[in-house]
Image 1 (cartoon, each protein chain N blue to C red):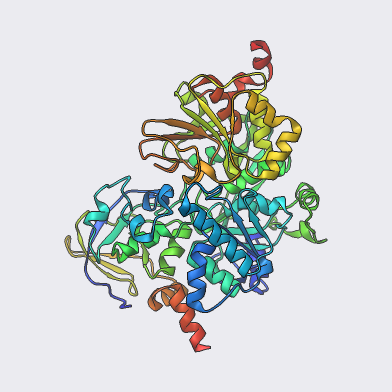
Image 2 (image 1 turned 180 degrees about the vertical axis):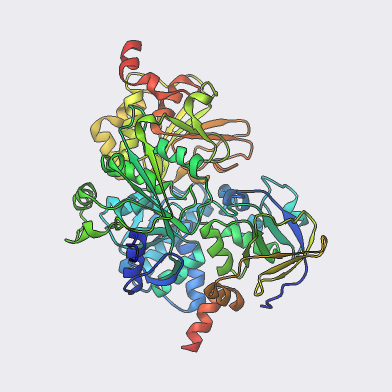
Length: 430
Length: 166
């Protein structure tokens, strides 16, 4: 009997208008939604579209966000932003989110993703939205220009690796720790495959945490990451103004699907993780690196400055101060998140502890915004990449960690296990 | 484009050469040629100065890992690199390379190519001759859809051809 289908195969078959596809085939898919930002989008698309003599195939299916060069810091970045705004206006892109936050955050925040969609993004962290059960992958500028001109693209139908998590996390251990550990366990060389996250631990996660998993599927090198939708997914979409079809929950891998590999993990055994410079794959337990002195702590990026992430940082920073000689920068992933955090008192907690509030956008994570590092400086960051030179000078060091670990390290002035500042330990110390 | 590339000189790199090393994020506002002058500088400061037209980049696993920024592949192209050979590629870089008319070929794990080796590449036949060492290396064939794109000179040229044919 033929094996069942994976979620990725089902979505690709639907988008390709074919009864079924199998891993290894090449399919041409109609794109349901295409998005890009000010760095990868209009400034690269415009000359290519002119070369082709084409305009956007369907402006209603294109989403643009200015997030990399915001706010402008010089005439060059201002020119890139102006070009983006002019393009959105001239091409009739109604869903242009100007300086409202990071593209990956704005899609689910506006209810634009739903299970079964085939989405193309002009950014490598496009898998972020895979938490909603859509096939959402990143593409370079020429691919994206062709996609927004024609509405279609080719895909090599990927195999699916499945990771199944059971058990409950210890307090202070979160989705970010899962992904850092997986970067070490699975490596970063998983191209032309997808990863699907499943199991009771995932079922219990809020959408913000699920998005951390799918976001950092990019670091693992997978085409995208997927989580089958459940009631948590549908409730999030509806709460953000999205429509959900009756059959939305049918977008899941068959039980007898042919997974390339299945890995089982016990969440209760995971400890807080850090990734040492200069690769996410250099992950290890925080305790193995405790005591490394830091100059900067950064809470930002699509993966690390969602509302849940800011709440985690606030839980640690409540009643505490950032260590002397350390700067803590917080760049909420969207202006909406910043407003929510303000309403809840989260921002007040962070700023009372000494945090600096930064604009919503990709900021220092992409090496384009404010908060960059000098030679010899060390930063611990909630972001997803610590490649050499990414956040400033080639001779600076970036450590990746969860919001709990970053906030705790900001207080200690050195890398520290956040469990020492949470729960019983925190009460004893207070 | 000819299916047999002209002889080229190898530049050998290790595993996980990432997009920030190929095209630094902090310099992305620069014009493509200025940005290319910083290509690989973080790991090999003299690369952009010394690479010559027709040279071949050789690397280990997960070449081009990281960002979707096409400038990573654009920079190599502008510096005259005529092909990238690696044990494996990050997916977005792999697509970007073909879209720009830059063939990306997968090397077997045991392939031996050192800095400065002279290479002759026949990508249609899936064969790389290491002329310095007198060895022949079988590389994975390019999928048919990408062969069409690279032989047109890249995705834009391919789409224009296809548009003209319709």
